[in-house]
Amino acid sequence: MKKALVTGCTGQDGSYLCEFLLARGYEVHGIKRRSSSFNTTRIDHILQDFHEVNNRFFLHYADLADGSSLAALVYYVNPDEIYNLGAQSQVKVSFEIPEYTTDVVACGTLRMLEAIRRTGVTCHFYQASSSEMFGNAPPPQNERTGFHPRSPYGCAKLFGHHVTVNYRESYGLHASSGILFNHESPRRGETFVSRKITRAVARIKYGLQKRLYLGNLEARRDWGFAPEYVEAMWLMLQQERPDDYVIGTGEAHTVREFVNLAFTTADLDWTEYVEVDPRYFRPADVDCLCADAAKARTILSWEPRVSFPDLVRIMVRADMEEFESGFKTTHPVVQSSVRSLWEDDAHDVSG
Image (tube, rainbow, N blue to C red):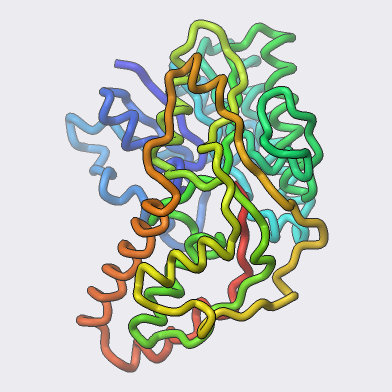
């Protein structure tokens, strides 16, 4: 039985990846940061009591900001594969807390690579790189495109990407990076622009919200379906030789297009509900990200299957079903108390 260690297992990608690996017979170990509140919502359905004989999914406390905890866990688990998905992944927030973002995203990657090197554990390593590293490089972007990050998050991811290449070349680690473009799902964090939009559509439909405030509607992104992207991660680590791969659909759509399609799915006219708020503009923005994933198609035989319109519809319908269920069971006083919860959130289009 193969063993995998996953950082960021409670996030969107981590939860789908853990499901994917468990379905393939892996024993999966996830890293969870200490929190005063439960943050396992996305993986509760695969959690079992560790006393169960057939349990193959285990959670451990560790942190990308704590190198000793990583080294101890790598040595204890002795995994065949490590997937480094943990990060402070909000681009907008990275401008406000750049030092913390860099410590977790950049140095956290280095700490994990050092943990592998110093413990001598033989494994395949996956680094979650990001299309934000390309910044304003002309689209379409592929593995040969020059990097020009436009945020502390993009800069930190670029360090993590380069240090992964360095450890591969310096120490012979089987270390690969997936340069993933935007990938979404009903499990996407609520402050990312995609989920902020789809949740707002559902809330407006059921009278729980009146307006949706967004920033740059003309930003263009390559949006795909997250469960398909975790399959690409796994495929990279099954290759004989480690390498770096761009993963995306090859189509770019504006935030405005996303908004229009989301509201149309709920039979609403978005122009009646959406306003642009300059407070949500970034100090330095990225105009267009669009993937050239020819290498992944050729070597990994990976292809995106869910189209952009289908992705938006999947997310809107999932949020509408959630609110419809809650609307039927939640007391009116509770509904009123959360009426403006999502109206003032910053939005983020990072991948």
